[in-house]
Image 1 (cartoon, protein in one colour):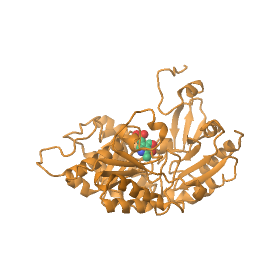
Image 2: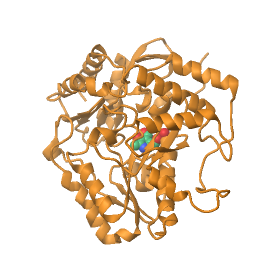
Image 3: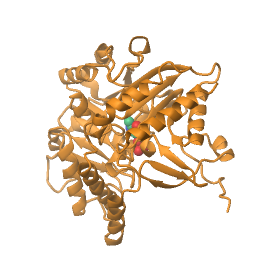
Image 4: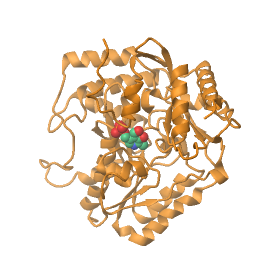
Length: 435
Ligand SMILES: Cc1ncc(COP(=O)(O)O)c(C=O)c1O
């Protein structure tokens, strides 16, 4: 029976193009999806940076099934269920030292809103209520809600939506192809881009600024790896001025860069950290904000019967998500997946950088199991070259992702060398095809 495609208004999709030539998946297992006509497609992007342990993991599926049968829902306000505490403890155990308080949400976007509100409220509780400004970064992606697009820096995600939050400013992005093109791992140049924060602070005065939010590795804007020393410098500046540093680890969390979190890979601990995606291996929507204990404890004042933080979601710590999260963390631990990206990074980097020299390839960048390939746009038709590469790869059996004229790879952490070879061969073939 032909599926009627009209009613579903698809997110972040060229709806008309899609509905003319639909791409439908109906099954997924391990490193692969299967299309509705039975073709196998290698997953080069872990679904959407989330299926870190690969698809259809039995332990996770069974945990969700069991939980659904046992208790479908538990109110999260003034009530709780044991798995919520267990999961929070397990997340805290793999987090950077001291980031041991966990607030659950249902997505990366909600995690971002939560962290921004937490930062502003934190300063207010400790008597600096004038610290309300939020600083983001050009080309940043922090989800799609109003706080997230306000601190975000992707123009297309902002320009249609009015004035957004007031009191937000941005530091410059770190992309510097003139000096850093084809860097393997962290680019050598650009620690000084962090000094832009000093300029913004001088403009607004530190006493008005609550927090700075950045992705340790920017993903959705086309894979920007932090220059060596950059994140350290941001940390120092924030410390000097009493500003909270928020790392948005929605894509980097849960093993993507070779450690459980990018904060550990880069040796810089933020004050708040947003996560989602890999927390449940993508199987049930869930996100979280990890807070330093001192931040959490600051809220724990006043009469004990009063709510300390007026924020939360009906589905915070949903039992199905918690069950999925626990089974996911167990799977990661059993298979050493939170450090596997580090083990595969060398082979992945070499394969990726073999694309240097192909027509139109102007940069290749990588860290852990993240890869970015930047292409020269077709004159007058920005984004078309990368989109054509995406379509060609899909036809030839590999799923990649594009943003602008950049191709992003973020395969499941269970990837084997043979999959990397196939992915890069398919991609190379698609790039070689005349634009
Ligand atoms: C860094 C970052 N933050 C936030 C989000 C938003 O997450 P979600 O789509 O789950 O709302 C994303 C999604 O890709 C992301 O990459």
